[in-house]
Length: 390
Image (cartoon, rainbow, N blue to C red; front, side):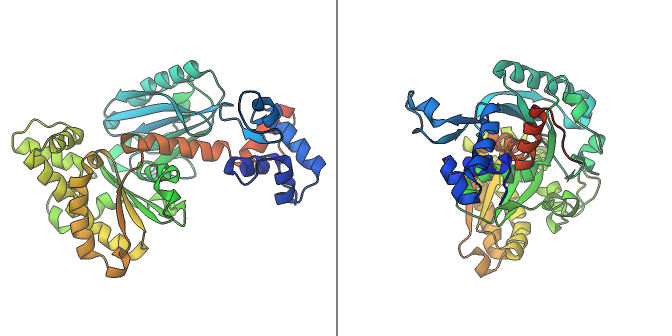
């Protein structure tokens, strides 16, 4: 075998190897080859030697330690009414954060300049190389081009290259994902350690579904898997959806629809986060609306559960703050609609990271790309002054 330095770093990061001897045993490479690759990684600051850490109570001599402080990744979870921002170390630990309120429909020209300004402040505060940026967008995303794809809810973003907007903060590679898929990615550091097959529901201003099958996020052709919010349902018959269609699930069960119903009844509720706060305070009408939303979403989820047979359904997004209320509605419909086999061992769980899940997922997306063996090898080649083969 002839693993690259990037491959060896992956073995060390995963815990499969801890020493040069481990690397040689696992890969079958000669000691000379292992030493050369480890030297390249230590010279780049990506590995620390146990000998250097032993005096401070660190690892034993001979061990190799991934240096989580060798760089950062930036995360921006762009929602319909706010963007959450954060910097993370290379282990996925949050170092600092910020938030920007906006209306995403105003378009990237209005939304992204303040986002870039806050990201630049995070970069300056931590003074480490930025290895990547992860951004999530509501709606369908082209997984190859990394742009919003024909999403009517954020039509002004369709096909727009986002990297130039962030140039004032960093020129690190940009990776763009759908908000529900990114929510699912966050569970790689959470429930996915116990369950290989998950459905991750984003129940917020809009509705979306992330799918984890066999430990991997499934985006589908054109990145359109999990767009449950625009499935036609009888309960929304005749109701207009923000996408321009009539009868979508969102028109009856999304956060924006619940807020509209509050306005119709004369209640001063401007965002679904306010509605969940009322429910948590015991407001009977708010609790009824959230449970009804869960019940309607559960009718669609029941079919998905029968088809995909997940081990767990994870609930994230703003409505998950009132998890017990919302999940009660979900369970009511799921167990009525899905097959007995599909629900026999099914768990319904709250998102591991709560309202930070989108940020964590964006960080995981950026880290997956920045620390992939090919990316590490390219970094080392650039440091050596050579060029990548064509």
